[in-house]
Length: 387
Image (cartoon, rainbow, N blue to C red; front, side, top):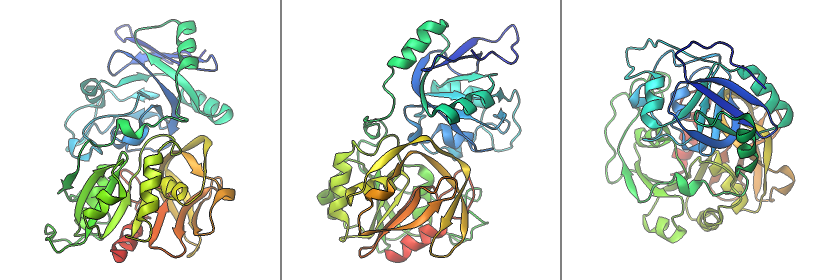
């Protein structure tokens, strides 16, 4: 059993239990309640707000490896979605103060406002080492049930991620038009990607249709800031419905969980290939590969962080990338029509593919980098040239 590293008299007790019987005791600094999910870890030093509002974390209890979280507060303008989607949040130390002239509130206030159950004060190094050794595990985080045996039993009975369609829980219900650009704080390199004097796109501008499986808003901001009209459609929209929108190109977004059960997406993407340029990120990369005949497998503990090295095979250059995924495309299943373009240098898994004949490519990481490095922004320009 893990123990609370330090705890004052006025702190509320919380516990995190894993399916292997390990229990960590700490203090609550978010909402009261009990949640279950797959316990994962993210190695980013910053970007906790973007992680909290990223729909790709649906069904997961996220552990931050950086020891102090919350020191720059929460900035509403930096949200990646209007609501939080993750199951729970785990940190070594929740900063009691925050210093940031842009901040709207503290991390703790944000968690309370959004109903996120969170635990602080546990040995996150021990937790991460356990996950790296044994692999991702199901867990339960609670402030209401503090019985170790009960929590472990609940963790063992929780559903996990494999075989679940979590996309339906986070995708939008209707088609919308996007109209928000990058601001001066999120524009990479001091406005090197987008014009310094931005003007909204006209009706004659290229039209990007985004299939939203749980898309981060900063992706849409990039497309719009590049001068495109941007339409966001639910991830279960059919190919016929998308083609009626007369897209210049279709984007396949990131999203949560297992890509294999999303048969509606596989079918739609297969019908779009060759009819319009297609660009996929993260889950979109997996779905594009599956639609063309590949298979995916579950990684031992996933890739989550803003420091993942990727090799661009064509140029030989190495990109430091932001990643968040627990599944990967299986090398041996890759169809002849797909060519590997990028490799993850930590474990040599596929990090990018492109179609040999059609205008379609995808990467297993986040070039919009919110938060994270800016090495991969060229991928947006590559897609722009296809439109």
